[in-house]
Amino acid sequence: MLVANLQRQLNIKHMDDREFQELKKDIKAYRDAKNEILKKIETIKQEVREDKKLPWIVDTTRDELYKELVQSDVRHKFSELAKKAGLDPNFEKHFRSAHLETFFGVVINPKDL
Image (tube, rainbow, N blue to C red; front, top):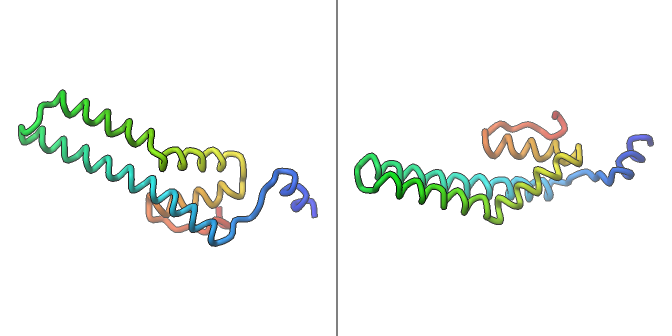
């Protein structure tokens, strides 16, 4: 009874499986966007090593790619989810679980966190 009242006061709700899958999808979208940028940067670095591009061009291009990632919708969504995790203890467990699975391949049930 006391826990239920506290959850109502804090506006905490339990996440169902559909919502958890949606959370995983949002985190995966950010991971994929980040990995795509990192691949582009690695390709550019390789071109410098092969003397196909000048280093100063690479620095400018790399900065633009990171700027693109930071300003992307998926990064904004990920940031909002991270902020929400700081406010809602139940959501934080789900966020951490999805993050660990998506970025590190570690599967942990949110209830075990």
